[in-house]
Length: 324
Image 1: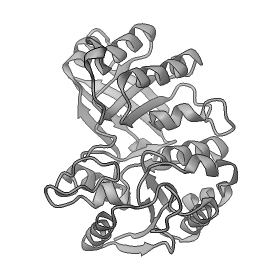
Image 2 (image 1 turned 180 degrees about the horizontal axis):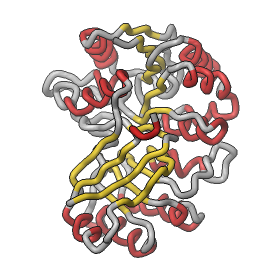
Image 3 (image 1 turned 90 degrees about the vertical axis):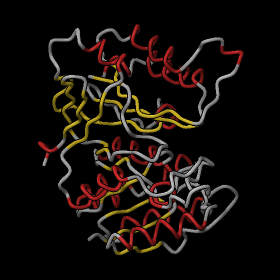
Image 4 (image 1 turned 30 degrees about the vertical axis):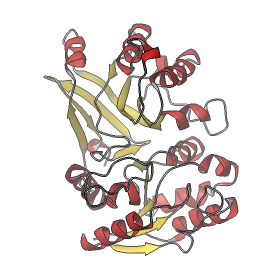
């Protein structure tokens, strides 16, 4: 089994019970769990001040662990981007450490990709992924309801990553996607394309900065939590009008959760946002339904790796096994 280093580069861990559950579950799976000295630090809304969290990232890079796992997302890595130990992180990945995280971790992943071309993994954090509470409790670190136990698909994908046998992931496309793609003769939407993206708000926040990865001909995947569809559209329009989206082989939407429509919306919805985006990107396929985001069922995705994207009989497949 794996040596897993748990650290906190973003928000402070408020749900200590979820933290403890996550550690115990990883240990029950046979993993050796090493906890960073400041994993439970707290300063304002952060897991320690900037210097504390930078040092934690440095220790994660020096740990020699098989997996460096964040405790949670939240906010905080954006403040650290000018001082991140990019070379140390690159060396750690080269020696076999797989950095895994979601949400705010997108900032580190894309900055590392921009600076060094180093791949990381988009996947669960400790508290929201492995610290799922008993029924009725809360454990996701974002105030959302718990599923009761860690999701079986997520656990299987994590095991595949740890063991190095994962070669891809797939999902059933929603009917609207299947109807649109039925008109395409070629089900091979991308070949050898760089997979990149993550949390939409974090992706958009890097545009125009030194930490923006210049990915053309890639597969861009996106998710978010607590963002109303009009804010999602605004961020997508920024990426569209900056020319980013038209440069991609495909756009893949994961899960967008924990928002509430109101009477003022009068029919405006996320589906309408995606419909409008498709009308603007006639030559770039836009897929939905990817099981990834702030939800229990999430696959693990190799950010910065070369992938193939295929659609066959209503199923979408992201494949990266050919890169081994």
